[in-house]
Image 1: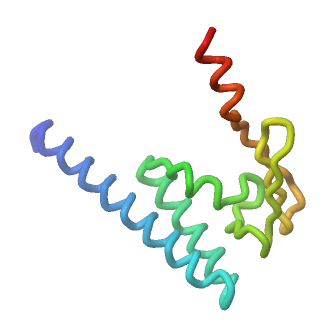
Image 2 (image 1 turned 180 degrees about the horizontal axis):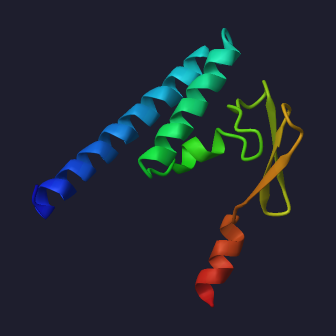
Amino acid sequence: MSKHNRKKNKDLTKRIAEERILRLFCLADFYQKTRPTHSQRYIALARLISMRYNVRFLREQKRKVCKHCYSHLVVGENCRVRLKNGMILTTCFECGKMSRIPYHSRKSLAKFEKN
């Protein structure tokens, strides 16, 4: 097999893996209220696929998964989101851990652009 075919094959497998991960996240969202155990399993499968084929989660997908216990986060059901001191604080009710994601307000971005 030539290098070109290997690269083409690798790109194809990564694209298929991304599609499967997206599909699993959609299923996890769909079954979160009725079957939370199925939802957790879909997230675990998506994580395994991403590790096997070296595909990263999208930003929205990363924020739907607890970084500590890998549970599927749904605001109001099993997590709490607060805005505090320039951070998005997400508290998981499953493990009790908190994740912090920085954000910038429009005022601070305007100051940054002036300098």
